[in-house]
Every structure is written in C-alpha cells, then in structure tokens.
Length: 451
Ligand code: GLN
Image 1: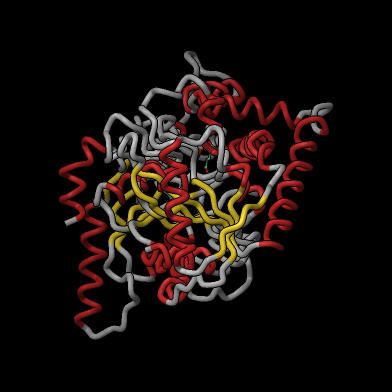
Image 2: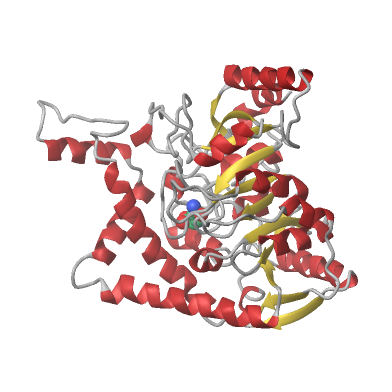
C-alpha cells in the first residue's frame, strides 16, 4: 500500500531519491513467513520505514543529497539501519535532503527540492524535508532523520509530524555521513509520539563502532508514553524564544498547548537562557569548521564522482575539478567559512570564541534544569515559507534554527510535536520540549500527555 501511495503522490512531493520496491517487498514477505512460522516479532515488525539519504545502506544508493556521491552504492548498512532491519522493519527507500544536511528547506538538494504535502508551493523544512514529507504524505508511516541543528525537529514542525533528536550519543552514528561530528544525532520522524518512542527504542543503544555512543541501557520510551503523567511536572518557557520574531499563530498554538498541560497538573514557569541569542553565531562557526574537515574525504579517489579536466591533469587538478562540479553552493560556502575559521591566526578569534559561547549555552541549560524538568518553546519562528523565498539569503535561512540549535550545542534531547494549525495561514505548527541529557523519557512523558 505504501509503495502504491509513493507511486501515486511522489511525483508531486518528491520525498524520495530512491525507492527500493523489490527490496521492500522481499523484506515484507520475509516477515510474513516468520510470523506464519510462529516467530515472536517486535512491535514494529513488518512496518515500512523511509530512510534519510545521509545514512548509508547496503545495496541502495546513498548520496546525502550531493552530486559528489551520485551513483555510490555503499558496501554496508549504517548501525541504525542494521537495527531497524533486525527489528523487522521494511525499508522503502532513501529520502531527499539538503546536500550533506546543510539547510532548512531541502532546496539545497542536488536532486531538486521536496514539496510540503500541506501546500506544494511551500518548503517541507530541512535538512530532512524528504523524511518529514514522506510521513506527512502517508508514503511512509515512519522515517529516520538526522539532526545537527534542527533537521529532524524543524521539518516536523512545518509538516505536522513528530520529530525527535535523542540525547547526543544515544543512537549510533556509524554509517551516518558526518556533517558536524560534535552535533550530529540520528532520530525518529513519525505521525504520533508513541510511534516515535517505539522507533527510538529500536535504534538507541551502545555501539562500539561509534566512539561517542553512550554505553548504557535505555529505559523504554514507549513505556514513558503509555504511562504519561505531567502532574507536578515543572515546564520552563524559554523567555528568549517566545517573543519578537515568532509568528503570532505559532505563539498562539504554543501557548494553547501549554494550557492543555497546565490543565493536567503541570506547572508552567518562565525561565531565561540569556546566551541562546548567541547560539546561531557560535553554531555557524563550529558547524562549518567540523564540516570542512569531514568533507575533506570527498577527494575524487575514494568515493563517487571523478571529473578529469580536458586533456588530463594532476591529482590536485582532478580533485579541484571534481569538487567544483560535485559540491553545491551552500556546501562550498560552508567549507570556505570553516577552513577560514580554523586557519592559523584566526582560530582563537572565531573557533575558540565559538567554543566558549557553546559552554555558556550549556551553562544556561544547567541553570534552567535546576529550576524545571523540561523546557518549552515553539520549534521554529514561522510556519512553512514559500519555496524560493529564502534561497538567496543564507542569513534568513540560518535564522530558522534559532530555537533548535541550542539543544545540539549542549547535546540535550528535544522533541517537536504538532500543536495545531496557525490561524492566519492554516499551516502546521510544532511545539518543542527539551530535557537534560539522558532524560529522553521526559520528552515522551510530555508528548504522551499532549496526544
Ligand atoms: N538548518 C541547520 C543547518 O543548516 C540544521 C542542519 C541539520 O540539522 N542537519 O545547518
């Protein structure tokens, strides 16, 4: 049914870069066989899932939205993909994304934009717009995304879906094509909170192949949803993320959601995070710095594209021609920013200062979590904007991330949950909750109470 739905609507939505029809049917038949043989299967066995193209998949092309990886078929599965296969889920294919996960609209994909199923002239968010749109358009019931500065949560906000960035290190990033290694995290995109919890229960857990993976046993997120109870829970509204710059209808739906929680016994208090206003500036130095290092492996020799200048060329000329042709403008912009910020003489002024700001943002979280159990804000300042509207203005694009980036800088978990439609434009709005590191169950508790 999902393959039929993809065939019917994906021409207009363009959520998928690759659909693995044969692989999906074979995996589904295998589950049917195992079920018929009486095997005890997990709760998500047989459920289809869409996979963001940032995760490498054995036998399926994996491009991360870039020309430089066009046609590359990896020889192995990323750990989250291994885990969903082991749990019996059925991968449908790979979803569209901003090139190397750089963006907030999926317009930076080398393979053309994804369209928001709520209004095809609008962006589906980014970088994981394909995963969010596939779920919103009923092409897939579940999807995997990656969140470095909001790429799971902001697409969830603009498509009326649930998106979760787990605690940094909760889900292995082995086989995730790295953007910024100190920020990247893999997580679920779903239509409701229980589905997200069930999927996080499948993908979380220690992986010795990812040195940042946390060696611990995680409590069940699904249990947290089923036993949701917010009486006595202290919810802090971040003052700096609830004012100017946020669309009226976004704020209205945000406060209505808080009222619902208050009626169930939660205590709503205002808290201040004075350094959040510097988070975007710090992020857009740290991310390009790490990205410029991570992307150095695309050298025309090891993976994907190789462009040889007319008449041949030296190794360096081949590398330059390949990168010129293979990387899009946003990727080039960030590599230049990152290498500049890391260069001798500028390191302290830019990268060093950004790391100090990062520590101040982390201290804001520490202080806030002494007063409250979770923090709340709108997930992003506005509803889905029009395709093309911010494409020529990188600063305007970066400002979308104001509410989501602090969580990545601090490594704390965050969830975006649908909060209704904005009255002025009828488009989806998300509410974001953030919890201390390792306390992902608190997000699912609040989410369960809202659902
Ligand atoms: N929009 C942010 C950026 O462009 C977030 C990206 C992400 O989370 N991958 O960097």
